[in-house]
Length: 183
Image (cartoon, rainbow, N blue to C red):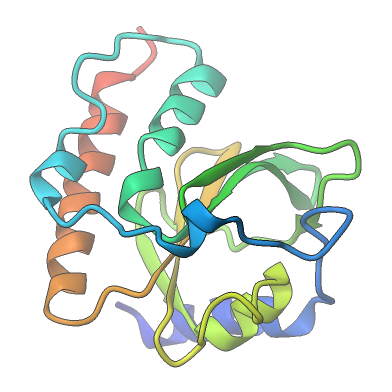
């Protein structure tokens, strides 16, 4: 990955103030505390198979929802002017929908479907999750799905399994983009 582009992504997260995901600090319930990610990455590669929906918003939300078992946290953003607003997010298996006062942040205009990694400590602070995940064990990734949508995914997967997970995610993203080309 281009180290210059990675540095720009990290700088974006460091420059911004902390965003508020919910009206209160994230509180984990019993099921979330025992959440385990799915380790069978072939399931991740096949996320988009069998969906033939042409509406970009709906297909993107369905794809995002299908990522829940594979990552500890995820955030789906929709571009609103210069910033992007959180539309949905999940934390340790629990999904949350957009709130009236949805948080926004400036995201990079990276190449479509390119998986960019970021320093997790600044990303966790920005997302208000520093108390949930240990920054030295957590990895953050940003993917621009389309001109309007992007997502941030967090995982605590260790190497070499992280490499396998990212390869499977990349295959799923390619399948996602191929199946839904507007006709």
